[in-house]
Image (cartoon, rainbow, N blue to C red):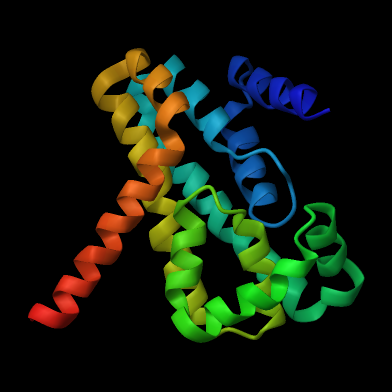
Length: 193
């Protein structure tokens, strides 16, 4: 079933509705849908590398608005909808751990989930359920989601279609490495400035 969803997502790159599909996919993935928008972002950007930054912006906006919708689900509809979404992904037992991450790391938890392959939707829904400061949530989401999608768009803009194989193969490693560097940078600023 996931393979059919994957193929369905990619087919939108071959239609005139690719930008809208990217926005809707990014919105849905941030709150409930299993397929990440990176796939369509890469396909659209490969097709027209000069529009890579435009597609990254569309993806970022859709994802952040979708994250806000996920926050709303957790804040107002956790029992009705939120718990079902979390159970669908088999992460019900992890909610307590996510709560501890929010208590300990606040915006960092959202930022890391927003940039890395960690299921962002779980963090958006739980942020609302645990009533994390919405402004902090929003800023962390904007920064992390934009960094993720503009990194992909920028690489394709610079290197063209050749970079797709590299991104597909090493995206998880690149995301973790970037997150480590980002955290190290903030630690350096905190302790050395």
